Image (cartoon, rainbow, N blue to C red; front, side):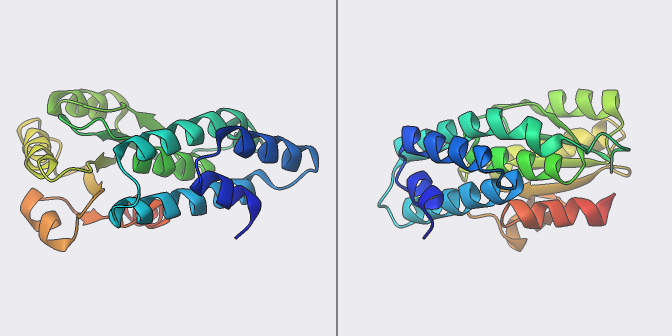
Length: 206
């Protein structure tokens, strides 16, 4: 395991920043650095699923990742000021404040040339509807880590129908134990098992 991935997995905030700054000074590709951070985040997720890490560790890892992205994002977006590949509205649904997975998806979407409208966490269904109408985005990505959010995802998609948007908006869901059964239950179009699969799905839908 490389040092940056290990530091991320071990939640060593200062070490992550030190390695990141050193690698940037050595002209390492920012996207390769992002990939190492993602690998560390994946390990955090695995440890959480095994019961070796808990919610506090998830929050810590997300905070470290956010700090790293404040440095990396401008560099990742350099030279990508051409035409956008398309618009995506994203957010964690109402009743859930987790942002770990969503932060990764947002980062990878931006790095792949998409215009991302991140509504944050604990987002009410009507807020998604308002933003989709405002931006004209053809894709909505809903994140939710806890099982109670499945009903909220379903309600959010119902709100799209009521707002006359469902026919033109493709919906991707992700987080926690989401699978094809939950896709069918919520009425979504697909689920992303990780950040890169979510990016691939957006590419198929736009």
